View 1 (cartoon, one colour):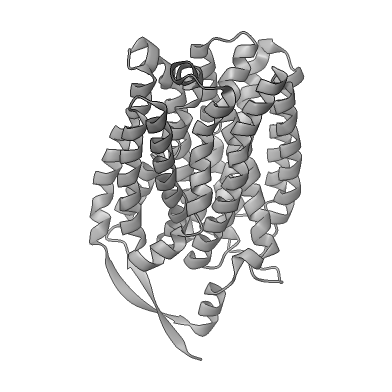
View 2: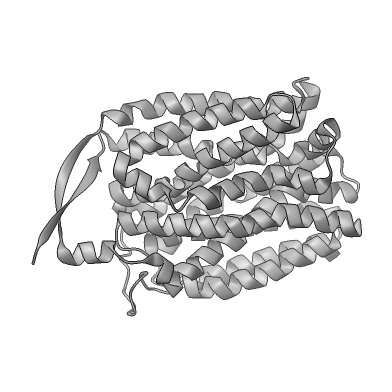
Amino acid sequence: MSNKQNIKAVPSSIGLIILGIIIIAANLRAPLTSVGPLVSLIRDDVRISNTVAGLITTLPLLAFALLSPLVPKFGRRYGIERIILIALIFLTVGIVIRSLSGAANLYIGTAILGFAIAVCNVLLPSLIKRDIPNKIGSMTGVYSISMSLFGAIASGISVPLAVNAGLKWQGALGIWGILSFVSILCWLPQLGNQTKQTTTTSQQMASNDVNVWRSPLAWQVTLFMGIQSMVFYVLIAWLPEILKQQGIGSNQSGWYLSIMQLALLPFTFIVPVIAGRMSSQRLLVVITIILLLTGTLGLLYGSSNIILVWIIILGIGGGCAFSLSMMFFGLRTENAHQAAELSGMAQSIGYLLAAIGPALIGFLHDATNSWNLPLFILLGASVLLFLVGIGAARNRFVGSRNSYELPRKGR
């Protein structure tokens, strides 16, 4: 049996790796979720329609779709740590450019930060699979909480920063450049990581060479990723506007969006831990869909007096869906290479689907002058999420026809 060599990074300290993952994850939603509550301010200042305003949320998703398939190759060639550092630098630059006045700067900066976030989105699951393989569930939960917590904070403080603090929408968006700069400083020590040669059997190399693009299971994971992302980013972009139609002011609707994201926090940690100990995650998929359907139906037909209840239910469902999509990258693959390839594929096609959401919903609202049809679209998306989720939750690896019992202890 022939052996082949593979480069594997050796972390100088697991503690530093975990700290780096947490701080980087904090940057992956805040620059995006800070936009939703400010859409009306941006729209009026730049003088654009709801459809065009939806592109502010759509552009990063298109960037995710375009760059994600290439990221695993960059990571293998230049090293995961180095590529992540470059991405963090571009993220900071993109945030600064977006915060400058003018529509051109708004969209150019948004595109740049979208490319940067795409790199980190793809490589973080692979980094966890490589360096902390026995704690995939708990580490996925930790970085999911970091993402969601800072995403919620960004939604809640955007309007107060822009209006009450007098920073305008530019300052409210630009302030997140401070966090991305701090993440650069925290990640710099990782460049000192040494590398070592590890031997890999030909059987393992064969598993490395699996073409995930030909795997039905990989496509189910991809569609699950895409549909849940579409639902989430539609809510991030338009929930404040949906609430305004029901008589809720900008400040309050921004905090409601923040509460939706805070509601998912415990579940972004609990769900990955539970999922990692289950051979099949189908029960979790069913629970997730019930929550999403209930929350959406509540916005459509429920009492406005308990609208916060529907928002919290939506948040919990969204948190479960996101956590499952992240877990599938590790649970449905056998090694870090496959995890990166599946992550790249899922985030490419998945976010391409998600990118359609905010602009389409904005267009439908402009065409009907109502949020009812957009909410029906979300109901249909939840049904589709169930269909692909049942397949993605099967106890199998990509590229394999047989079912494998996944290790449960320590996941």
